[in-house]
Image (cartoon, rainbow, N blue to C red; front, side):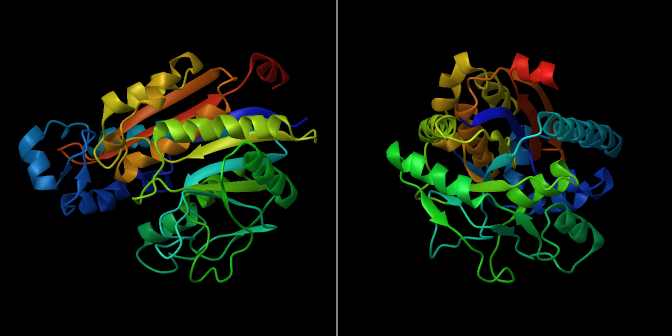
Length: 336
């Protein structure tokens, strides 16, 4: 049967495609954002956030601090890349959110599995200042890029989920990548973590951002467990890696929420993930759902390591809670 040999979670914030000196460009969007999400479910403007919490994170947002955090994040990404190389999976199931890249409001499934031959990205960022082009390259969205899919395995996975009473939407092609194609959650994984080895990928697109059909934390955790069962029952000898792309808290960093989520990645603490309220999972923080689905799929594996960096980019504490983690068995570690 197929075997899940590796679980990985990684943030995919634009900050990870830029040098720290360019993080100020992302901070500028925070200063003018009228709908920053708090973990209690409230929405707030930056001036109101600053009035509420004060400039308590000014020192954390200093450029010299950001440079050090940039180095640590890139080291964590290098370590994730090394884990993938050592585990040598035959196929990778990538769980990511779509942000109007492939799907739009005219057709927005709760979650969808792609079973096409080729994963083709949307060329959203073909021009602009150099920092935008750097972000586009990091997401494989500076041009139309093509990556190998795993159609046979993906179709079998869809069938396995349907047999387990999990209704899943599907797609098998990108019609016009200049209009719509795969986005940042998937391009980042290929560009930053896979290197020269073209491992086939199965994209699972989860709607985390856009109500009214955003699933609950408990539901995505259940789907993750169904994914594991479907993979374990697959008759092949494929070595499978499951990758969660996105998160953690943003666009206001909430270290308390992030550390609660990290605690929940241990199988015995899964209730912490399952009981997260929808109000804590709005906007960018909704990408935590990608990790929760992956955690459900790999909760038979121990959490090997996890790095966490709260990336504050403004005095009031906006930014991203960046996390990088690996689930792998002791036996798999010895093989590595």
